[in-house]
Image (cartoon, rainbow, N blue to C red; front, side, top):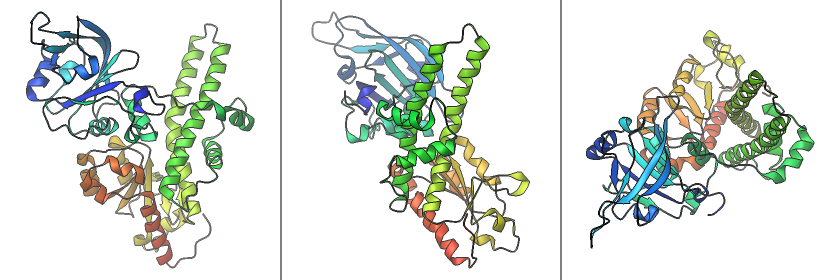
Length: 412
């Protein structure tokens, strides 16, 4: 096991695209995968019926929550008494996930270090299927058999920001605490969380050698990575302190506390991303308004060069730019389309990796340009990468407009 890599969470992974026959097997009462030699690389040779605790999970891009079923798997040799032949199979009972399988869906079977098994079925053509395939480095699923990955300790298997998000999507908890940073956090903030703006500033200050002027894309990802580690480190300490005090039977207090933790986690990432982008724009000397108001009280995340010039009907709309910011987008990217009527071609920045071609094609058709930090471009298909912008490209685009519009603007 190598720290910071997928080998911390999986000892081996098998994957394939479900054929029509296999999808029917998953849905029917048979519920067996023929393992042949491939699955033996993960589960070994079955001397008898080997039982595994298993979690099945079904994912698509439409449902807000995955379908999850806890059950058991049995790994056995169907010809155990044959003198020369073996026929290994992986059996599972009927569960809530199995009826959802369809031809073309991605199937991933992962053996965890604790001996349990995670079985993921992701809808064919979906963003989440692309993300799971990228996460595990499954580059060739065209052949009918299982593709196997055992080591999971290459540079490609390093668990960083995008990989952590996908792992959490499939129910794998990722430890990002760095205890050596705790003393500094407690000295700065005590036993409380500061505002997200203050926390983002602290995160950037902790990386003094990272400069957006040198590489905006690398800086943005480094700052987001750093803030995630700092946040989880401080959060774990504060949660431990609160749980140590206890709730003394106060069920409502416990529920309220739990909800506040979840809500803070959900809102923080998006705000942190906006905070760090703002730092990029300031470093690049780009004029902007953050959450300025447009038609129908819409509030785009960023307006360029400013809300003042957006509201000035005499200002040439060709010099206006808007940027929506969403740490993840799924179907929420369509919200951006209605946020600034004067700007026909809009931009959206997200940290979502491996968005499906169907989604990016629809974005292009709606005149929405996707902006992705350069390091995540590798998660997209070749045709998609030719169309994507990175943070530096977007900053240069806005700077050119700013230089060409002939208006002297006050500092943002």
